[in-house]
Structure formats: C-alpha cells, structure tokens
Image 1 (tube, helix red, strand yellow):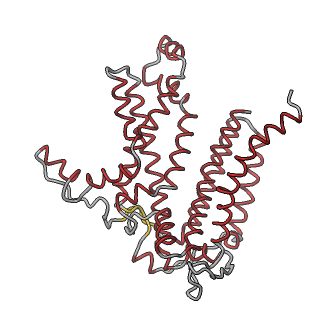
Image 2: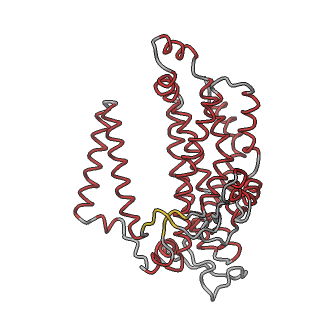
Image 3: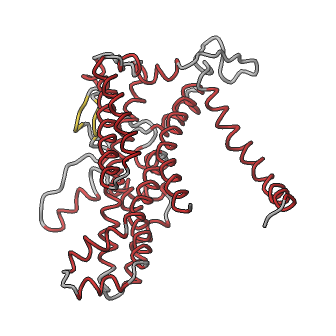
Length: 379
C-alpha cells in the first residue's frame, strides 16, 4: 500500500514534466486565447511588430468578424473545406483500409509483402506525399492521361484549381443545420439508451431534448444562437459547398492514411479468437455472415478509435494542402493555412489566434469523446 512518502516521490519525479507542459503547452494556449480577444495587428495606429505596441481588448469581436464579416469570407470557406475534407477523408480512409484488411485476411500468397506495400505511404511525410500527388494531378499529365494507356481520350479535369462547387448551401443557415444535427444526436442517444434499457440516462436525455425543442419552437433559440448575418452577395460570388479542387487532396490523404487504418484493423483482427470463426462455420454460417455478425462487430472499438485519430488529423491539416496547392488557393484553403498567412504574412496576430482557437475547440470536440472511451474502458 502506498504511503505519503511514495506519493511525494512520485509527484517530485513528475514535477519537471508538469512544469514543462504548463509552460510550453498550456501557457501558450492561454496566451493564444488571450491574443484572440485583442486588436493585435488590426489597429493601423499600432503596428503589430512594434516594441511599444498596445493591445486593446475587444472581446469576441474577432470571432464575430470571422463568422459574419464579408471580408473574412475566406475563413468561412476554409471551415467548409475542412468539413468536407473531414467527412470524405475519414470515410475513404476507413473504407479503403477495411478493404485492404479483408483482402489480407484471405491468407493470400505474399501477405507480408502486400502488407508492407500498403503501409509504405505512411512512412512518407505529408509534404512528400503532396509533392508526389501534385505532379500526378497536373492538368496536362499524370492521372488525366491515364486513359490514353487504354486507347481512350484523356481527362480534362483541373484537379487542384477547379471552379466547380457541389452540394452548395448558404452560410446563414449553418446554425439551423447544426440545430437539427443536435436533435438527431439526441434521438440517437435516446434509442441507444432504450436498447440498453438504461432508463435513468434515457429519462435525462429525453428531458433535455424536450427542453431544447421547446426553446426552439418558442423562438427563444434565436436569442441563444444568433443567426449569422452574412451579406447576400457572398452567396453569389463565392457559394459555400464542396469545392471540386479538394478531390485531389482527399485522394492523396486517403492514399497515405489507408495503410495506417489497415494496420490498426489488422491488429484488431488478429486479436479475434479463431474459435469464434470455426464455431460459426460449424453452425452453417457463410463467410459473409461470419464477417458481418462476428468479425466487424469485434472491430468496432478499433474503428471508433481510428475515426477519432483521423478526424483529429483532418482538422489540423496544413502541410499536405500547402505542398499540393499552395497557401493562396482559395478553393482549397484550410484554417491551418489561414493561421499561417494571417500570422506570418499579414501580421494579423489577433485573427490568426482566433482561428487557431476555433481549430483547438474543434479538436477538443473530437478528442474528448476518445479520451472518455479510453478512460471508461480502463475503469
């Protein structure tokens, strides 16, 4: 049994780590959040790099400008790009990684060789991957001329500079969309608790959902979640949606990370007892039913962990986009790119800090559920 002396020694050994984390992580995070509430770099009378610069506190004005000011339309475009990149990158990586895992599970000849080939892109940095795929996606070569190998006409798709926008929507409707997403999550949680017969949690979720719905129906929601009043000209000049120029970047990202997904799922697959498969086959289950009813449910924790990790990567993506399309391509811009351009080119440190803080909050939303599941599994 541990005594006070053991606890004191353990705390003493951990103290240098706590100090370094406090200074180089949490202190600078706090400074970034603080700078996001100032006018540092936004006041022409106070040059950002002046030794005597005075930073005035402006509250949440920088955040409001990022969400509503027509001049900051690039940031809203970056959030849209990040959302679609997150969705298609995660789905594509999980889908391809799962397919590679199932292929390797068929005991094919040269399994170790193919596993190495599938995993090799993971050894490259995103900068190297971006450079390779930038060459492959040139309009006058690369993938566009692949059909000519089979005697067909070449493609004429402008991979990284396409002006096409799919799945268009208006920015001022985003709060409404998120509200209905919240209702859908309430319904999903309620159904899961009902299936588990966890009536106490179900009652809490239903009560909270009813309160939110009543607030929404009564119109009080507009005072809690203010609408995003964006100039309508923004919708016609730069409509929000899935920019086709992101397709090439998504393909490159999936190519690199699908091997990582394969490695995680293969590790989970190897941990499934072979007796379960044999028992199912003895009972007359086909190979398809073995996978759908035994293998895939057993892989669920690994899939969830992989989704969290890939989501975390997609929110912070910078180097891949920078290498493939550069920092000035409005069609493929990401929040990380804007932090660089506003902070190191325009000296708009307050806005750069606000963008970084928003990305931090999004990362927290992704990471917290992952940590909760990990800690719950260890209880």
